[in-house]
Length: 294
Image 1 (cartoon, rainbow, N blue to C red):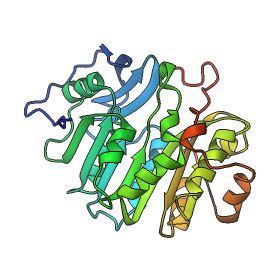
Image 2 (cartoon, one colour):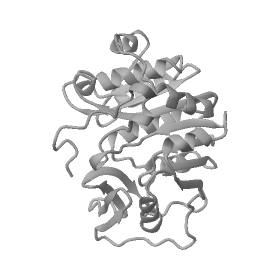
Image 3 (cartoon, rainbow, N blue to C red):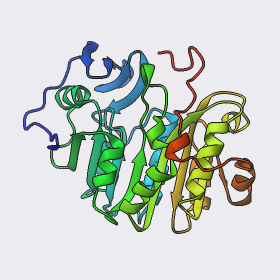
Image 4 (cartoon, helix red, strand yellow):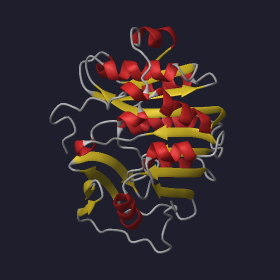
């Protein structure tokens, strides 16, 4: 499909909420009264993205901060990279990468063409950035991506009713092999997943990634890792050693500190879990009622 690129003359909304029916639900853009030209995107009343048009380095969501730490550490500081994003939303992380790693080549697969159009019109991205967005199914897109061409692959896709669950097609060994095939030898794969007690889905995702990649880490708040509440977990994997110490320091210094689990501790975390194949893949469990209320 043809890539959707930035219009030459952006149309920026005023400070009123924007509501638009898109392909997969109702999208709302709500202004942040504390930050000029900053917007929260919700899909069917579930927070989906936060974008500050004046400061793309400002990351409001904790899990996005953790994804950004991985992006910061995937290559030498400031060096341009090639990044593939599965799931686009309002393009928070692609905007961050464009600001922190000028000259990066980025490609985004977002299933909802209507959402792409809304973001393009209302929250325009930097026309100078090498950033292209396609209306495409994430798994089909990664299957057709050039082999060994990416430094970073980011999976941040939620579907189902209200956009609450990771689709089953993006949870299997077969999918991860496709993603791994697009990475350069020292590339990094990172995924945003969500789970709650007893964390069977997260454990299965660790076991699945371990069947494809030799190096793994899991990042989440302690309360989520202990199964005390439902929340986001960031899973990263590579064929080369990961920057565990640097990642640990960064996540510990976040406003909501997180833990980095790797090595023997991660093996113990996933003990008893089996790699997921297409034949047995299921979506991630939905959150409890009210978990993502605005």
